[in-house]
Length: 36
Image (cartoon, rainbow, N blue to C red; front, side, top):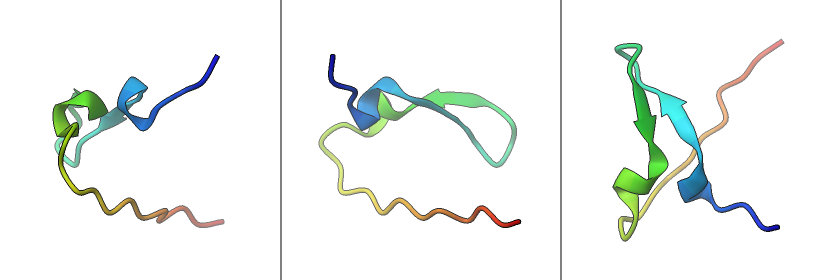
C-alpha cells in the first residue's frame, strides 16, 4: 500500500485540521521545522 502526501491531514496555524488533498495540483514547498 502506498501513501501519498494527499492522504495526510495537517493542523493549520489557527489549530484547524485540513486535508492536504485541498492542495492537489498546486506546487507545494514542505519545510520541516521540528526541533529538539
